[in-house]
View 1 (cartoon, rainbow, N blue to C red):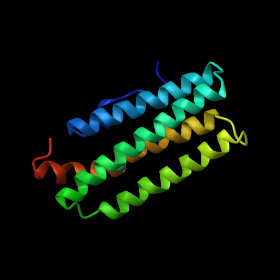
View 2: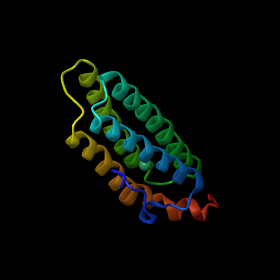
View 3: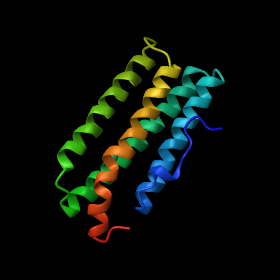
View 4: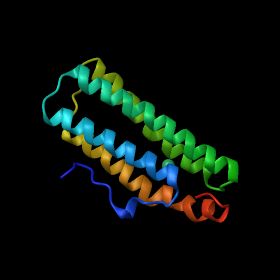
Length: 135
Ligand SMILES: [Fe+2]
């Protein structure tokens, strides 16, 4: 079984958002596998940077949707995104400098953060965006 399994509970019903969430989960699973199989720093570093890049693309997309349709909780949502991004960037820097390793704790943090964020924060914009015709 995958480290982070996609489940119905994560579904927002907004096509592009669901596709992007699935891709993020896939990248987290890839990173977990690389760690589990004892892959080198280079391999893990590459997946980590892909994950960060794709996370930014995804956050930008969500913020664009919320901004376009005037979602009232955009700014608090945005700060959650920023908080996560800066934590992961700090981790990436320390990882590349050899100060910290990729551990199960780090992997659990990524998984828990994304799962909670989808379930609690992303779900808040769903009825609003749907009422605006976003599908
Ligand atoms: Fe979000």
